[in-house]
Image: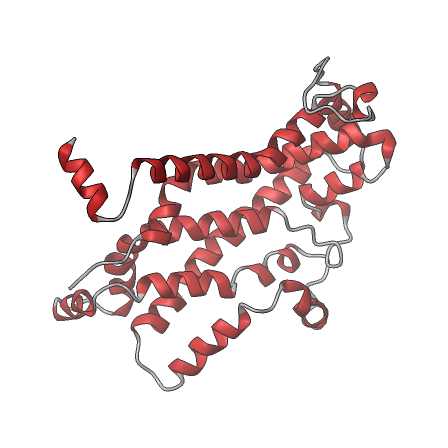
Length: 287
């Protein structure tokens, strides 16, 4: 106890300060969880409770009718509901795996390789972080049209398999790995490919899992409105938006659609979340 008090005084801390930080983080956590809580509550409300004023933050008579109506509506479409789920899962898995593969490989070269134009490429990646996907939308459509990829699975997977954020994250983390480890691998006869996947990649596991969260979340939200026209190729978020776009009559169904759509990203985050803070706070390996 005395040692803990001395350590707290040494680093300028105090019990009151610790309590204040805890309370602040607790309030921030509640603020971030509130939208999720509100979505779940709205999805469980019967229609007569959805339009009460002032709105209530709890359910007086919980019901699962909104989810039943959602599934019934989805099952009456031209394509079976399972097809939409398959499309979303396919897009999410392909984009996530491909983004991890390409971002990790390119980041290793940019972080540990030496070649002409390396600094220019690194600066270009940093500049690309300033632009959102909507800025490139017209150019993406033109490229897809010329390549004949409109209304195919490639139209909703190819533009998302490489992102500046993923490449920047992996490059920054790989840059913290000591060069001595790379040189030792070369002395043992390992080439660049083996060094990347057997030496570097195991040391950047937290960054990989963090990128997995970002990649899966982005891929799961892909709608492909302007690229996909065939009903059998549409992902689940597109169908959910179509179902909930009927207005007030389907307010409860819309809330149920939101809950179903946000479940997979939350599950992936909970599986990988223990590594997120480690990625952001870890200072890297030391020589």
